[in-house]
Each structure stands twice: as C-alpha cells, then as structure tokens.
Length: 257
Ligand SMILES: Nc1ncnc2c1ncn2[C@@H]1O[C@H](COP(=O)(O)OP(=O)(O)OP(=O)(O)O)[C@@H](O)[C@H]1O
Ligand SMILES: [Mg+2]
Image (cartoon, rainbow, N blue to C red; front, side, top):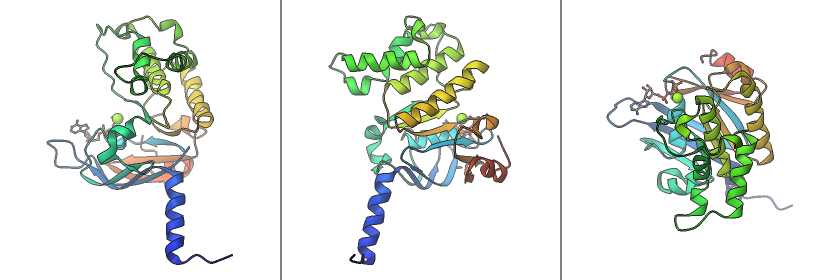
C-alpha cells in the first residue's frame, strides 16, 4: 500500500474529522453587551456526530451562555465555532435550522394565545417556509412529537394556561418536531414531576440513539446523569474545568452543581 505523504495524511485526517465532528469550539469567549468580563472564556469543545453530552456546573458558570453561543444567538467575542463544518459566526441561520433548542427561560405570558399545537408547529416553520401550507409530513412530525411527550390531549389548550411542566414538554415537542440533527437542551427536565423525570430523559436518550442526534443537555441533576451518558462537561466561572466520563468529570469538577 502506498504510503501517505505528511500532507496527504493531514488532508485525510481533516476530512475524517470533518465528517465525524458536529460541533467544534476553538478558544471561544463570549462577552455580553455592556459587560467587560467574558461569560465563557477560552472554551475548547468538540462533539462527535451522535454524541450525547451532559453539561453541569453551578449557577452563573456559563452553561446557558455556552448553548446560546453554539446556537449563534450570542456574538462570539473571540475564537471560532463550527457546526457540521459551517462557521456559526457567518452561517448562523443555516446552522440553527439543524438545531432543536429548548431554552431555560422560555417566558410564557399567562394570556399567551398560542395553543400547545401552535407552539409545536412552530418547530416546523423553517421547513414549511412563509408562503407554504404545512404538508402531511409536517403534520405527522407534530403529532409524533406530541404523542411521544404525551401532550396530545393538550393540543388545543393555550400555552399560557398550561403548568410549567406541561409547557416544558411542549417546548421539548417543538424541538423534536423540527427533526433536527442537534439537540441543545437547557435544563429541560427542571419543572417535571418525578414520574416524568424518569421517563423523559430516557425518551430523549432513545431518540438520540434512534435518530442519531448530537445532544447537549444542561442539568443540575448530577445524580441522574451517571447512567444517562458517557461524557460530562463541568463548567465553573466561565471555564470548562472537566470533560470526561461522568464519574471522573464530577470528581475533577468537584461535583460543583
Ligand atoms: N444577558 C446578560 N447580560 C449580561 N450578563 C449576563 C447575561 N446573561 C448571563 N450573564 C452573565 O453571564 C454569566 C453566565 O451566565 P449563564 O446564564 O450562562 O449561567 P448558567 O451556568 O446558565 O447559570 P444557571 O445555572 O443559573 O442557569 C453570569 O455571570 C451571568 O450573570
Ligand atoms: Mg442557565
């Protein structure tokens, strides 16, 4: 077999990495408008395609900032982020089409007129386009996501009249209905009752496997994650202080959640 020249080898390695890497942050720092201190600093993080990673850390450690930076919702002050090889700084809109995001603080006004069904259907908007009507495929995705989260019976209820846990399930269904390649979930289980806290993380893990989703989940529930994944990132004070298998990461990170 002909030997690679160093240049050819470098090229082959880059190509392999490019196809296997879904999210890559290189020395990324994010500064909020009007602030001087970066909320995350010099973050290096690579997620392979189909990887499931939990992110833990105390309040204000930068977890939400990390997700919103990956999503291209916050301007990067320094460094580079690519998603499936696309530069998030310049191709953010394209990148966001492939991401199902459940934000931590989705503010729902009590008088919010949108029904649960409307909100889940919003997950399809990027695919439907402004001028088109939903197709059968759009309807199927919405029904499937709502059935999986067992919120089909809430379809016609206004979002503002649902409980916090029900709203959280609607937001998860919206992210799944989008049929994304990446899931970014920010404390998606925080309002759920004990029964749903058992079943919904398992559901997410199963969908992650079946649909080969790259999944990043922020949580404060460190006990629940030992069995749930093979990799945990611990943040503290804007830095990644550990990135390892769950037991080691929590030990190194001082279980700082
Ligand atoms: N919109 C904002 N403007 C200015 N500073 C912000 C803003 N949002 C967050 N910060 C700051 O950035 C830092 C990281 O906040 P972030 O929300 O990422 O923390 P977190 O780890 O998600 O915390 P929590 O566990 O409470 O959700 C904090 O010091 C916070 O005060
Ligand atoms: Mg947060």
